[in-house]
Structures are given as C-alpha cells and as structure tokens.
Amino acid sequence: MDEGSLKEKKMRIGLICFSLTGLATGERLSEGLEKYGHQVFLDRKSRYIPDSITETAGEWTKRHFPDCEGLIFIGACGIAVRSIAPCIVSKKKDPAVLVIDECGGYVISLLSGHLGGANALAKEAAGILNAVPVITTATDLHHRFAVDVFARFNECAIFHMRAAKDVSAAILAGKTVGFCSDFPVRGDLPPGLMMSEAPSGTDPDVFIKAVDLDRVPEIGIAVTVRKDFCPFKETVHVVPPAVVLGIGCRKGTSSDKLRVMAEAALEDLGIYREAVASFASIDLKKEEQGILSLAEEWTVPFFTFSAEELQKVEGDFSSSGFVKGITGVDNVCERSAVLASGGGRLILKKQSGDGMTCAAALRSYEIRF
Image (cartoon, rainbow, N blue to C red; front, top):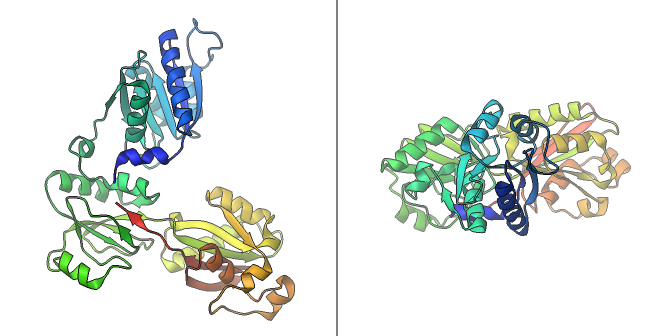
C-alpha cells in the first residue's frame, strides 16, 4: 500500500492566496489539480489583487471548512494556523489542510495528514509545482504502516482512535501488532503486522504456516462491521462499507421513522452505521422522499429495481401475498438488499412494523495492502 495511491480519491479543494506571487502559484496549482480530476476554486485576499474577497481569511475558512475535502493556504503558516484553529473538530472529520509558500517552493501538510489525505495531497501538489513536500507524521518519516492511511486507502471508516494511536506507537517502537479480517485480504502484510486470525477466503493450510497461534499481540486491527468483534486487548476497528439495507414502506413515511427503523436493525445486528453502503427498494419507491432524505443524510446511494428484477433473485425469502398483490413481487426488502449487494449474504431477515420493512445483506468486499 502506498499513500500516493490516494491520488485517485478526488476532492473539492479551496485555495486562497495573499499576494500577486501567490496568485501565480495558485493558478499553476489549480490547473494541475484539475487535471488530476479534483474540483478546485481559487480565491484571493489582497487589496492589490482585483476581485479580492472582502471577508477575512478566518471567515473564508469557517465557510469552506465543512464543505471542502481540502483547503490550501498559499502564504504564511501563521495565517493558516490562526484561520483553522477555531474550526478544528477531529482527525476523523477535519479536511486536509496544506500551506504553500507564495513562491511554490515548499508544500506543508498541516492538518489531517492521514485520514483527511493531506499527506497524499501535499505530495501531489509538490509534484505539480516541482516543490518539496514537507511531511511530519512519524510513520511516514520512518516509512512504516499507518492504520488510518490503510483505512482511507480501502475506503473504510475507523473507530477507537486511541487504539489507533497505540498501533502506530507500537509499530514505531518495533513491536508486533495483530491483524485479522472478516473480509478477504489481497497483498502482503507490511512489517510490524502479524495475521492473528484467518481472513475470509484464506486457505487454512497457508494460514497455519503463516501464523503463530500461541503468540497473539495485545494491540491489533480488526477489519469488520461488527462492533463487538474485539480479538485484542486493544482493538482498532476498520469498517468497510459492506452492508446494504433493503427498505419498504408506506407512501409518505417520514425519514425520521425510517431512521429509527434502520438504526434499530443495525443495533440488533451489532453493526456500525458507517458500514452501510447503500439503501435498496423496488422502483415504485424511487421517488419516496423519506428514503431519499435518509439516504442523503447518511450520504449513501439509493438503488431501486423492478418487480421482475426482484422476483428473479435467488434465495430463501420471506413471502407475503399482500406485498405481491401491491408490488408484483412477494418480498421487497430482502430481495432488494441481496440484489443491490451483488448477490451478497442476507444477514437480517425482514423486520416489519408501523408500515415499514427492513432487511440487510452483506456484499463482497476485498481489503488491499
């Protein structure tokens, strides 16, 4: 795994400069970042530059901090630090922040180097400007594995950040960290990690030869959607978006009621909400505002299928003559969950109540190093 691979993740990036020299650097950088597929806008803050913004740098930052994946200050570090300080929430939520000197000689990764992608963006920007990237995170300096980079690379959420810090500290200290996964793993484990449980799809003979079952580290990483899967004394959870929720409801059902149902289903399963990859239903519900609103709130896509498509899905599903009479198919939530998951495994049979139904399927997901 290479942090440079994060270049493929496209960002909405805001740039701000404070001088004519900085504007020239910003224009070069904007052009280069757009060629990589990023969505970029460049603002300027100087009385000597036409069309300069009137708000302060701090106000500009406050406005764009929530809606950009990256912010780049072309000027002094002090301006950037003072501007972002009131906005910082956590490394799981903050955008990538870079500082570049106005001449374009150095690109500093200032905030959210790993989860936010600032380190990767700094390298990308430095390449465009032929500048020197300044990266200060210890795992990068020592070229060691970083669990938050690993999570971002695999488009996964991460939980138990204190344990994540301990993972990095252990690896930097030359200690061994455990690793296990509920999902197939492709690639070799990096130095410092030891397979502590067979991942899904692993040949048992290969696993037995590779693992010392009597030596399980106290600190480790578990790739899972399950909240209660903690095989180590300190366990970092890396959570893939691998769960599809199939939903059925009466017309006009509110997003609030649907949210309560969906959260209750996930709670029964002991599964993270961040594991939800998408919603699914019959095409009769493609304009159902409650589902659409909840999908927007959870930032997941909503897929719908025809009754004919759903009826062709193979499996053992709960059958309802009443539902078939209305929709043309005997079950909506289970069939749509399995179909949207690409033929995945049904992990929650139909739950129903108050005119709503919900089911869940687990789709295939491969973890890469």
